[in-house]
Length: 258
Image 1 (cartoon, rainbow, N blue to C red):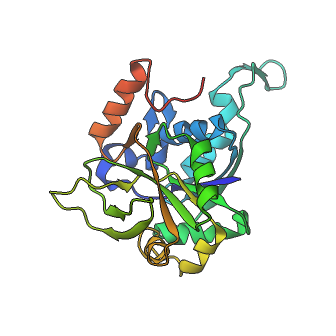
Image 2 (cartoon, helix red, strand yellow):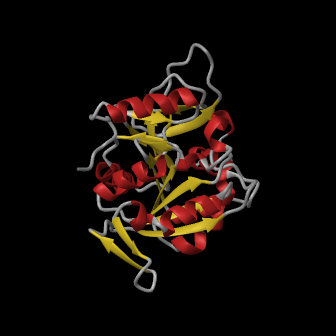
């Protein structure tokens, strides 16, 4: 099953770092947050990734092109025909398709642009700037159990996001703006989607969190996977520092892999 990661935004709220690189390439513990997200999916056996790029997309392509160099010991021998020897080659069991989905394309448009790489299959979708300890195997099992078009992982966190109205049987009935008195759950990414979702994406101007998910909710085709564990986005430098501190502590709560 393919995992689509949205990695094309400008990251304006964390401009101290994102003026040099895309936000998903900002490092936590010396590795891009994108790597942390992929490691979690890989831990559960999902290794086929499609990365939707835009802003400074060449940085993402260059990092993956040189991945084994970054993570292995290397000998450069300039006395012997400028040869290079890689020692203890470190590689991941990943297939990574990196797609330039446009500089100003909205989230829904980015998903639509990679439809040809997904085909007529169930797929996963998440954001390239948030980590979690969500059990992805159980998430997929839940999605398959209800037979609806879309499942999104929901978290209860006091942040700057629209909130979800959820029924007792975990059906999402609407999206709306958050107000100061709200304790409702928010969209934490980590979604599982059926290919029918593409029918509700018009083009580059479509915001995925608007028409596609709102349509799914109106049709009774959007379900919530309730996650009570750890989740954290990296929207500001303060959040980046918090994630780095947790990594440096030796026990980051999103690290499910060995």
